Image (cartoon, rainbow, N blue to C red; front, side, top):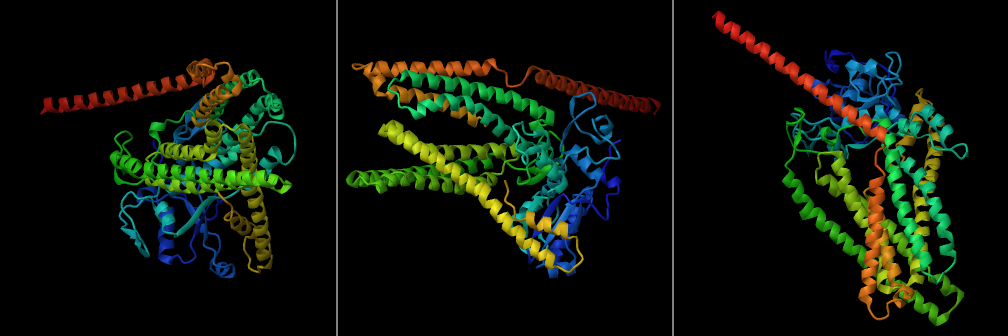
Length: 596
């Protein structure tokens, strides 16, 4: 029997808040009431059937600067049915990974009707976020109280509320007790051990856990390259054979570490259930809009949008914009070289200590400009990719990554290619590479670590004072936590491409060296052919290594094949039952006709 939310009582007077929704200060009461009803209404009535209450009552709002903050949660049954709706994959008692269903919940490992620990914090918050984002307009023509905020059937309500400025933000609320346990096992005690990736995944989700897992793996994997490369940086050797050996080692090592990471990643994603989920059955992303219709594959009602309109937006708007941005970053690069030439001429004319320091200033300024341009372009790329109206989140992410990767690569490395292959100035190349790398690392540490930490501490002190001065009888702990967290900031094919580019550039740089050129004084064509041949041989070696090391370990491949087989068998049985049912109905109809 299929269980639905409408058959269950999900009304609770108190609940654990998981998500916070912040409204603008001047939002009209009729809008608040309409939004509340859509959030708590039953599914068949177009609601999300979640739990919802304001953080503060009327008197407390007046005392505390009228904070329009609302807490959102869900009952256990809502979360479990939501897990089934999004196709959440969990481990069964027989150690296999299967999509969770409420009807077979007792077949899953660690499930207990009396416990709330089956779903992780991240999974619970993702389910609530999914339900909020999939609230869609039905018969409404506009948002109540805002005639200019038009709606049409299928439009995401939360997205419209955000773009209209009615909803300021929606963010998950920390579980301080769980976070403290994670901190103790992760970074508060300095010990050389692996990160607790399973715990990180349970609290922050798979994406953040994979990010930290990759950082840990990549940091360790770079140690051999750093140890071998240190003498090459400290000593300027005339014998280019040594550089050929180092470049060859880098090629092999970069291929090996990428393939080993793929295997480790497959192990983690299988264990966490994301490797099993089928992409073709993904839900439409919240920002996707179109005319409401029936999906021919799933049979579900969802927005439909013609593919040709999306392609027109990509090729007539997005592509020209990206090309214009690429031209602009090349223009900025030429300004940087003008600054380099000015600083060099000033140093040659005076030769003072001050001008020797000035030689590094253009690179530092250019590194800062690169970081600013990368961040500004990221906002534009996100807007454009959202405007292209991709149906799936995976398609949205792929198009966004492609835009950002192309721009960032040209913006960050075009000057280095120009110095290496046009100016052919190895001394300037070393200086620019070191300056750009060090400056960007310092800037990233300041903007992503030190500045947010300082701002959060400063805001924390202000909130503490406000809460201590408050005489109203409220839950000061929850209020303080919500107000603090609402001020927090929000937080690869790419790797394969970079490794291929590194092979080509290393071979080209070695081929351009005076020592190698001296071996072919009469025919440059022979030199070019040998360099191309070596480059092709190294790329062939790279792809052979990639082929020899499977992306997924053998035991993961067998488990996935087993799941695929079981899915096909279940589908066959379902079809046979349907055919048997149809035959019975036809037989009954035939008997009725004979009797008549």
